[in-house]
Picture (cartoon, rainbow, N blue to C red):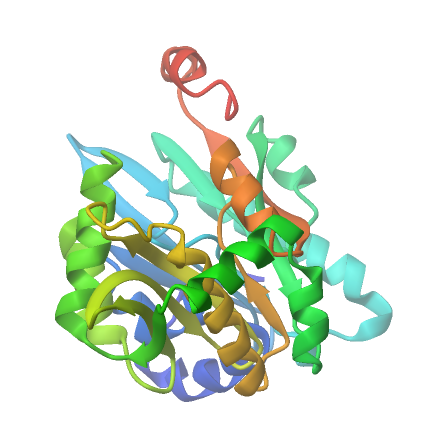
Length: 319
């Protein structure tokens, strides 16, 4: 196995394979908007791409940091068409070994990487004394019958959605870029979450297209009061941003926007709706109410002992 950056001569092949086996977060159109992102391919002895992953690669004070690309929940995919089914487990093991060896060879100061759901075998990392933590998300299987989807939602949440309609709230599919930015930025500011504003700006200015994303706004008296923004690939829709107007009395309309997003994903013929991130208790409860199933990804972490001791105090769920 050989690991190298994906070069322009690989782009045509990579794009085709990624469209089948990778998520939108592994697409070059997404990664091109992520700061300091590097796309790596795992090639077999015949030079065929058998897997790929992307990392944020940053040097600070001469120290190398390898982390998830910003706004990217997980990384990696296997090219199933290049792996014989009878030796699938063995080949995947070799691929994970090759990736762990490659990362170790870079001699990073700090590592924090969340792998895609397919990357289940973390033993090669554990044997190199990496820590493994679980990252959870809720994924809803989209069935053809809309009424079945609605019945899966928690009763209290269904009542909130129905009340939104009775209160004269209008939910619309929209592409108003400025309103999107305002709601998203204000939401992060209100919740005192430190984010890279430029990174979010890149999503709206250089990634968002009718063929990969959509948003729903809730309007009361022709004024926007809540919104939900999603991106999608050939299989899955991902809830990326949401927000509401804190001065409005209709703050619960965010659930109605999210329900419209689920319905829109069904109309697009997508199979899954990923609520993207369910590690905060209040958020977990909210996403769980929509009837999805809990899924997990492995996150590998490594740092010098003194750094791990400090992080264990501030983030005990990771170390």
